[in-house]
Length: 599
Image 1 (cartoon, rainbow, N blue to C red):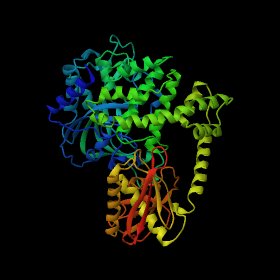
Image 2 (image 1 turned 90 degrees about the horizontal axis):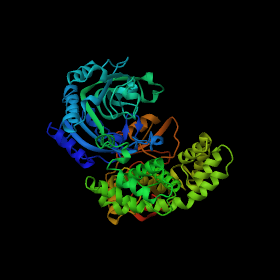
Image 3 (image 1 turned 90 degrees about the vertical axis):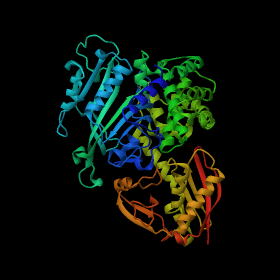
Image 4 (image 1 turned 45 degrees about the vertical axis):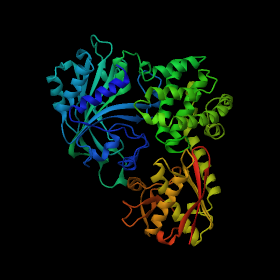
């Protein structure tokens, strides 16, 4: 069974069970789910992630039964990419009950789909259930349902939270016990082996999560210090959240020894092999995985940079380019391989076809930039005798563009160690020197006049307005203000269109006309994060921070809320007419706007 057929069978099966098909959300979370509990999540990491508000009780416009194929990205196990089952980008087939059906239906339908639709061998199916602990009891109900479906007791395993509890995505949020399904690709006697302990033999193919708890902090958000300060409280509604990894399921259905031999990877792997003059499986798999992730990230508006999501993308691209050098792929290869990925996925994700040219352009720029420095950086790395000091690692980062993770990986291959804390110290010192050189006073102001304070207030509106128009990948990277104008730098990978510039101007001027009050509140950093306040990503903030918010509804519902220390106007109505003078590039993935205000 091919990937397109598996997606369609899954969606149709649950449509017949009363589920509404919803589209895949972006890999870049919307602002209302970007902050999960007290932790900021850069990417959509699971099918349930975009649905957090509805799992907590908000009504979904499509009803209580949903199904989709969700694009996901995780980098927590990036070091394992290259084996037979791990990816950074992957597709998750999922179905949900938002306070509707419960364990009996969810488990029975999972079994029905696996055995009667996908025609898997029931004798090779093994499952696990939650064993229970001080937070929640043993999941007897799931155990009994599996037995009634015909699974012998020897095929049902009991595990603790580490293996059979899902969520929350951040530190807090909806979570609960799960039942996981494994397929024995070898068959035969267990000989004492267990599904959760032998992933090569037992492939985890599906996970039914029963979200009946919310993990919450006891007391104030700022008091988070250890797990004892969390509590598990029953949710107002019980939810079912299931997830089937498409790639792993394809490996089972196609009897493939790894996910990289399935139809979603095979054409790309063949192309990499043809290009290589020193082929090895691990490097080829890393290239294929990282390149696929990069293509989907760029299609969702992420561009390579040195901050946040852009940094993750840059890290992926530079790592795959380095592994291409290990395979002795000498020519520029990203353009042609992108076309292969688009051909593989374009019919199901037409956005890839629409943005193919811009995806290629972004990757070619990064390829050209890094390949020039890679060979020199490798030579510099090889000159270092013994372990890598923090200063050496920073030199590789600053002069040759080596992400610290790449230096650590190369050092491990040579059985060397890297002084990562020393690197971080060098990096922070460099940031501080750059900040002092570029920003004479608080907030990027080169002067403390009344007009400069008004322009500074306008930068707050300027930070939010491009996010409204261009997307939530936009984040400030710097600013500089004089009496005459403001300069605002932000993350975005393409030149703004004239229409987009006019829309930003219109939004800012509307907020000025609304004469919104400018307020200030001091609060713990963790509470400010939960509030959704934004600021310079690289800035280090103390335990207590100042949040300036613009809006009459208070800080929670304000139009703009930012970490800041500079002087501000009392209200937006005093600013005057806002006008963008110029928009230009300020570096790879960084745009710069010059603007002014007129009385």
